[in-house]
Length: 266
Image 1 (cartoon, rainbow, N blue to C red):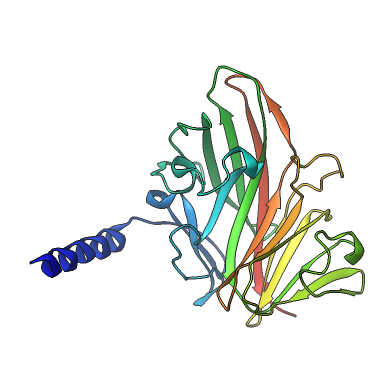
Image 2: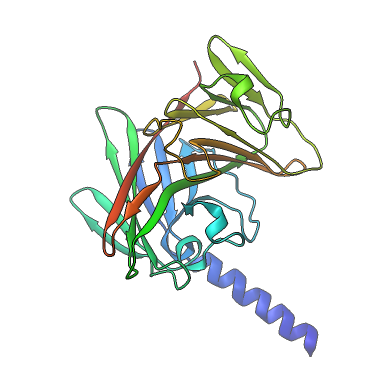
């Protein structure tokens, strides 16, 4: 009987996952899929039929998500309402807008606005953090995108400025810093003061993200404009970027935009 109950529970979970509603944003050959019931995560990004986002389903680490920074304010796991909660959806004037519940712990609400820029060939994602508390708060926006552990990651920063030093094998090529995905049995994460862009090339496609270039003193304490996290084994890599550490009065909000470009490698 116990085994039957377990099997029924698994079947219900699978059925629930299968019924999760998704929304799509399309531009040319590129399709971005967002799942409002799973923290409004970007759960797929395809060029034609070729997937870029990691399809591994680690409980705390899948898809492309959004957190508040610095991490020391919430540690781990990610804040449920913002990372996994059900977001309300409104579609209007070419914009797909998803809004989270208020975080019980942090008293923030997150809004994600998805649109396209046909002239520029970009999918435009604007994140907003709303301070729903009764006190002044300081916070920074933080986008985290999981991709397969393969290919090459590029950004613009001197190799010697990357910290902690020696965790990953970065090389300077034509003024650009490159990391070719490798495999170890430890989790690794680096920080860099970039120049407002981060790219990932794999299987003949290049995903490039563009965002505001921060001054050295603008990130949240202990954080950075660009971060790369490599999970142990041959699993996934996180492409991470952050915006400026901002003071928010009660009821105030900040907005931060990331422009996504996906195209064949030249």
